[in-house]
Amino acid sequence: MQTLSVEKGLVIQNRREVVKKVEADEDLKILARIRSKERMQATRNRRKKEHVKQSGTRSNSTRESCGQSKTEFTSQSV
Image (tube, rainbow, N blue to C red):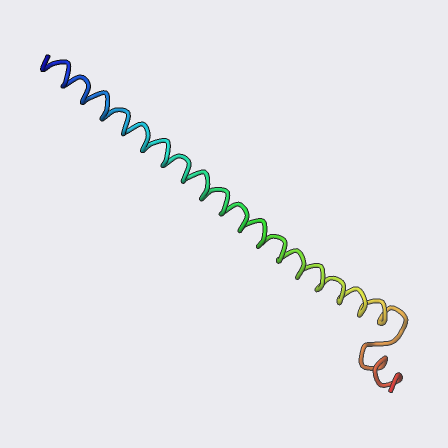
């Protein structure tokens, strides 16, 4: 009977370890999902900034290609 209780104890201990491992795996998945969302958000923000920067560059280059620099354009419009 003592061996049976020892075996039960080991089975219960093994189950606890399995449950802890499953919980740890779930936690890691949640953290990975959070990090992924943070990376996607950072990428979106960076691309928005790059897009705005490129948009500003294009409008300046268009004015210059028409024979007017940015300073000439602003002084003529005033």
